[in-house]
Image (cartoon, rainbow, N blue to C red; front, top):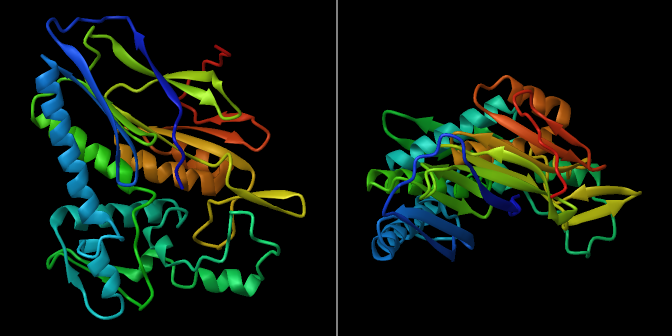
Length: 331
């Protein structure tokens, strides 16, 4: 459900204090099946690369925890015991699932990690020649719903009520990994950096010059043009959208992002970008707002303190939550 957030990091110069003797060290690599970029401020390249290796190890650890493709992961064990028995899990996975359930409640099910239970009746590879029947669509989401996740805090167990119910972290996992990696590096004394997990981006501290980070969000139709510069200071950003995978029936374009409550693909929205303190929350809410649409989605965001969003509709019109001061530019 995620696309890469095309961004440019620039500097905001007001009130900057340089970090003398520090350099910026950067590495791009493939982790969790996607592109990760880790940037740290460090006293030397050797020290910086050491920090990055620790970050890589943390992302790898998180992947083994939440991956539904790893036969030995706690997530796989939970899914294998659906309708059979509760599974005792680690504290951090229990808390992640607990937070995911709360987000599902807040978004009225627009975000739901049991989306993994959905039967795949939609094909966005050009092979679909007919629109699925209402009955088939209804059946496809019959096992979706966070009410199917039973949590026991005292025993730290997770139980999926019915056979066939599954959980997956595709719409929250990369943000979670980015946050955990940021926390680890801060604990190691890294004074500034960026973790970019295919567009789920979180920052802390400042550049080596002491200047603050800004993010330039590019126009979804023309990646050479930036339509807005926005600050990401001790904060995070994520984008949900689709500019390539879609199908057209009766003149209506449907993206590959599907509403887990109805089983129908979403139309009318091109992208949603969310700003919040954690990449995990940005990740989940970007998907939810995309599904909820501009009225309901942005209304929800406006009720949340410290969270903002930008939405681009199918006509390339930009909508924003109340706290964003939008600086439109063609640079």
